[in-house]
Image (cartoon, rainbow, N blue to C red):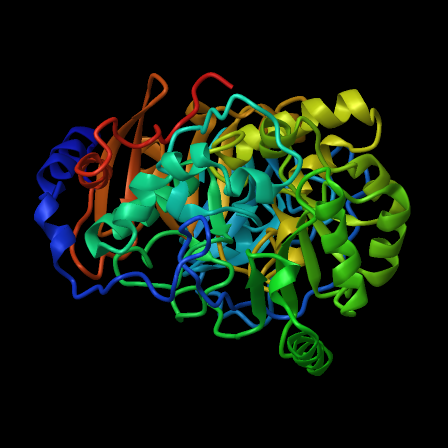
Length: 511
């Protein structure tokens, strides 16, 4: 690969003009609009994965006793590829960390994970990257509204009782006017989604839920859990999503959905439910139960109105919860009782929701969630639990855990590396700020990170751009640009064309 100065010169030359956004043949966003202007989309994906509970074993930071590497017999091992080494490797799913450890990648898949030198015999000619950090699966975001993540936080000046109140308010209508006025304009909409997906990538996320229907202008960024256009790496059509709520589902539709679940044609049903504290919010849960949709496939996003007895029923049914505490606290002044949910044995993941309310990215949300839970429900979750809630558990909930969420041989090499980890690698992940993200691999290819690590990779991505990150220099790279090169600066410029203040910064350097 070129030297750092040469790479930076190439980066500057690669920056494309804004005129790209007018080409590529993209049409207006698919479907109609939700009441708040969000494009309606059918959201599909996933294959069946095992149910999970949030309380992962409290893996100590003692190295795992694993002298044998764990190769996948189904992968042809050529002995080349990439060998990542770090102070710690976190396989997740209750497996103890390797300290130090290594991960062998060939092509877009993980081949071996183990302590130092366990994988080396399989990696005879591999490029070795000593990261001096913590190696873990790329983050999995199970709740987001990607097309909105260029907006700053909405400061309504009040608390609400449920989502219906704030969605119907004049203040919110004014706040989202720039979105509504421009979401039907292809170049503008492409920029909105691209900014949201770039934000996810550079903050360590490699799989995200909540992206509108796939289009060429943004399908080359992080994996979409719910979209099955082939580039994801999986081709099943087994996820359904309901952002509008259970009130949009009639009895016949519920029975059809249940039939699909029983047949195995739907393995994850992501539904915004019981968001808020009012009787109206709680009634959404009782309606879900009446329709027979409290099932193992059901993933309840929010569930703030649920009571401890309800979580017992959720656990028995095998349904799951996605927790977005910072957004809940901003909008309602309270959040889901995850202490009761965990006590009942409910699977819980953590996700940031969106930039208009709460924290802006998964790592910042993770820190917020830990601080809140440790105060309200002390001792309920371990550091390993918290990291699992943004990796393996989120993948299991969405039934994409056959592909992502853990560092297992045969899965996609979607990998995050953060600084530190000598004492407690899980704490190092929780504490990681933007400047601590050293490397993000997507399908084995460098997508973001320190220039030295990106350049040390054996393969050069098609397009890279330099990016200052909270006082550090980083490089962001696109693996595939089907419509031409796109720089983050050019994306921001398109958004400034209809939103003069510009998009919300990609990084939160303060929280």
